[in-house]
Image 1 (cartoon, rainbow, N blue to C red):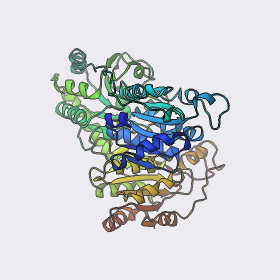
Image 2 (image 1 turned 180 degrees about the horizontal axis):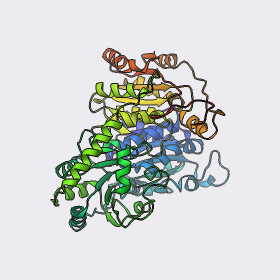
Image 3 (image 1 turned 45 degrees about the vertical axis):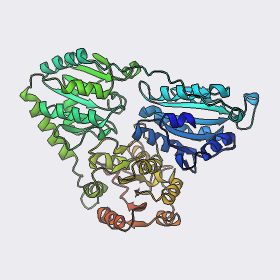
Image 4 (image 1 turned 135 degrees about the horizontal axis):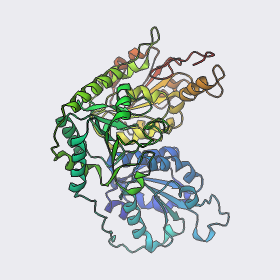
Length: 543
């Protein structure tokens, strides 16, 4: 607990277990000075810790028991790894003398988490507790942030440890002087005809985002975001031209493939950005790629950089903003074309007599407060939000790049606790919702200001879409037998409404929000034939 306090941690998420009773007792002794959030499933607790780390920049803390608890929490650790989120998972482990001897609920934490965590540590002696905890915080936040797992044997927890000051190791300094690298980038930029700035990854601050926007707007350079990183630049900026993802504006796709200079800041070109390795992966003498990342391992993506710069987004954007390369009038003309293409692409598609849920998302986005935090899990429903809800501020989109189902509800709960003054909206599909719906009892108990919107089309939409594309008219395992979601929410004490016409969403939300500052729930029926933001599926016909 002393280590938590010294590192500025005041909250943890847990499912209690008998293997870490002494840790729970130490937390109880803190009284109201420490907030322990009790969850109903370790997966939900781990998601909440990941979201906390994402918002605060400090490691989110999750406490679970051995064996089953550790296994259940793995999905949150996997998410933190892909997101680059600082997180610490403490696992109450079996006693030292029984480890590896078929002890009750024993599991090898190194084998379980070795491929996900930045490091797996163990506290084998009580005297090592301070140093191991300090090491965990340092590893979780150094370089590209990520999760660290700590095993704490049951018997170690009951040993006495003399209080002492933690011997914090000095953090490795960032390379703050990027003047030489940035000068080279400026020279490349001055010679470019079709430049593109790409933002992604982690380690961003609002200042870095604002300074990059200032630089891009001043010179007329277009800026795109990587998959599910729409909130890294104010989408109202005249330089913002869309996201490079599953649904990319056609104008941006064409420009990306013909750009002669791409400056990628903190992001990577993975499977999604390269359209399943069909876009940009072939080296081109007419394209020069600059990649700015926090550590060398991030340069090992699908697209090799021509210039690799080790540094964080804030230092690079600050240095870049001080540059004054010669401005090419072509840049602004390209930017205007791309911006117009992005704005047109943001308009909902007209499906005739079928109601596009994108219209509901777009209308609600216009009514929500500007700093609303939106959380997403996985499924085709997410694309309606990603394409039609604009984002204006950093950390207002919590949508992991690994796209795990069941994320949006725990993340929204965590965000509402961390940012009580902001509205939080959790979108979920009817398949995604039930994976962690039970955690909403926390929102009720704490009267959190959040909205749950379940987009109910009665199917696992993403999987059904691929089935219809590959095996038309032969769906299997994708029809859902759903409960009455409104009664389900009411049973927890949450005001709930069902709407059959998505066009009623915005007005329904406003009416319900006026009546309470606590959680509210809206089930919105959507047309299963509108399988994504662009296409209808006609069952049994070639797609």
